[in-house]
Length: 201
Image (cartoon, rainbow, N blue to C red; front, side, top):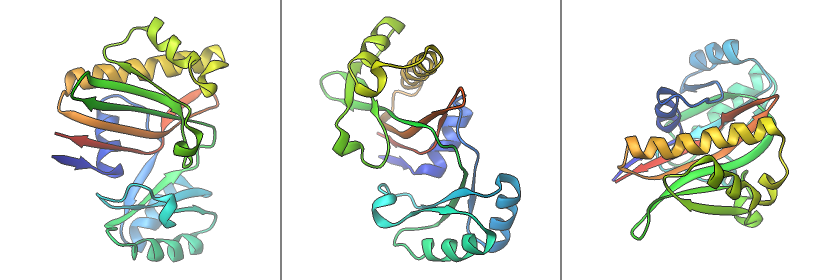
């Protein structure tokens, strides 16, 4: 079994043609300064480590407004157990969704869609479908969730495109056993991946 943390997963998804919010992996002050020149502030800073999953729960996500704050928080984040560096990511506020794949013994690859964010388990607003899907089936998925039930035409098209793209991805890479994109954010007419992880079998 192979595991892709956020850094590896997002790099892989960019190569596969998905839109990912601009990010840089840094582990030193000089790298941090270069990243902030490109991304600007305010921005987000997240602990990075292969086995770190629930970053917010362990205080591993920080909203940064200044360079001095960034340096201070980077040094704190690097001390978290399992950390190998920090991800600096452009601020991209918007509506948060959960997109993903789970490989099951009964149905092979199953698509997951619903409300995203750090409290996804509390919301319990998700639905599932067996791959492959078509647009008609994706529309049914959207209607089955609170977050997807009343969406604009542009958002609907964006979600359709990305859910179908996930199905195509696992056809191309059948060894993916889990793909967790949370959140996928829609803002200003665009949908982008903000956090992801992948498990391969």
